[in-house]
Image 1: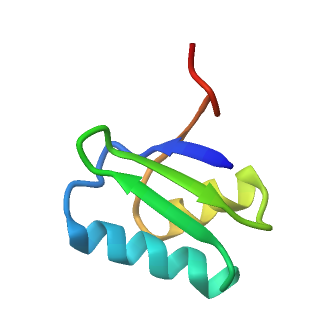
Image 2 (image 1 turned 180 degrees about the horizontal axis):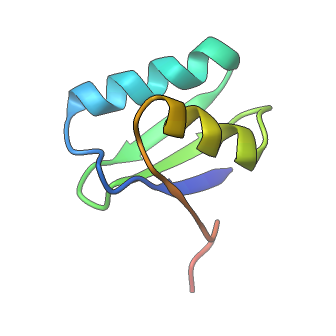
Length: 70
């Protein structure tokens, strides 16, 4: 599971765009969002770098979060 902070994600439209961008490259990916925290948890065959690049191409900067923060 990869967790990303996506500061510019603010609504369901953003969630849909991000989900669609990921599913274009990995149809089996599982994506969960926390809009309040502006975070996404992604289970995918894509690498962390590939996911960050996909989001960047979709217009969303993101940073990797620890999988299990202390």
